[in-house]
Image (cartoon, rainbow, N blue to C red; front, top):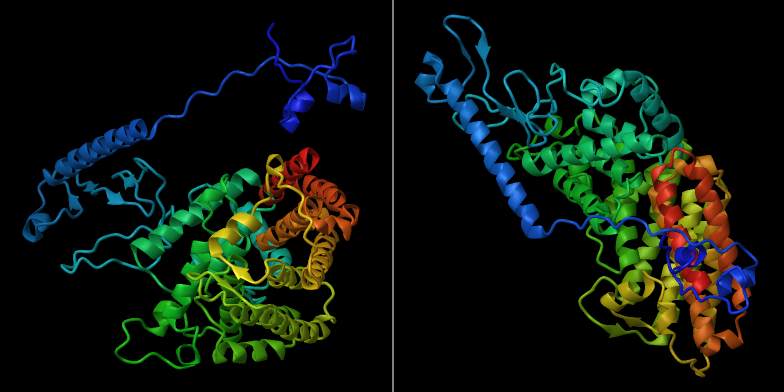
Length: 579
């Protein structure tokens, strides 16, 4: 049987496999040197070639023609039934057969765009109780009310998840996930059925967030379910209400990562929630405290503002600000939801709250406000220009930033269990100080290419003899220390609790690891290596500890978020070994 030219060890590392000259067993050089078995396996069967775009488009067009023909046929059979009411109005409304007396129903479009037949079964894609049914009003208005009587009104009624499992996930969210990121804090008297019937979208977002750390397959299904629901309610029906904003942010906090990063919607979901908050008026004091004018097309009852506690609105708008500003700072882009006086009042309100979860959100908002002001001082609010900031201006921004961070740290020292806040504070230090390593050069495209990926070991530049400046060395040491702090804080969390923390923390950990790898690469190719010992970075040890923590957190269920980042760490380990 024909075998692979490379052994399994070299294939896993993606390196060339050279045979050892003096090995009687036919080992390769790497395996002989490491004194390990050298195994050559048979080649695996080739994967079938993916269909081309043209062929796939042709298939989809054919399916669309078939569905149209089916719709025309079913509509024609219903219109052929005698119905005086339908004839008088010129519409295809439900009618009663003169002989059998059975009601004939016209197919309706489900909430996911599928056809629902007369018997209620889905003809293409799953239907849902959020489907918008046409009325007999000549204006073509939609009934925007949630039909709780529909037996397929939610994922429990349609059998996607059992009632007992949904109750367990609901309890997990309200007892474990809320303690990690207190966005939607429900009063103790609110029951499972009450939130399920009164706020179905928020309810679905909660159980989908809890499923993310428990059941991989169910998490995928619920993720597709909530994404389809957002598309239908927000983009098709154009609904805007507080419940949707809360659900969107919960989905962002506990984001189900797609298989490919190219399909990530984290940026879009965050700014959809921010845009809706601005339109509802909760991003300003006037819109949050007083009723809308008589000329406003939306009432307080329609959007869910009537009766909503001010503490809930304050938590919501500050959480949206935290995520929009975090994305803007990290990607060096403008923040569409700038900090204003109303947010300052919300921050003061939550800071004086007797509840720890309110104090945490206020503390996180203060942290992002400090970072946002520093990034504006650098000029990151204008991503269209390429600029170079003088060292004196950068040092002035950094000194102000350090002073304000020290003040924040003194206030936050009372809460040492705030994993998100502590890790984020050190991650922000990395972001602000890495601009000093750039020498004050700001180019958005170059930034994305240089700092979001690790360099290729095959493209090592010639070693530079240029002596690094004192500012560069100061920034490098501060970044190394902050990266170690981020990783130490994250690794202090119990592996099973890693399933329940926000997905944003995983991004901060990956950012810290890549920064350490980049500095180690720079030290080996520049004069930085003369003053910095690469062993002090401890990059290899942190990669091993992260891989072990992710492996334990993933478990036999292969929990989605830890399992995804485990694969990322394994690829970084391969890069480090090859490098």
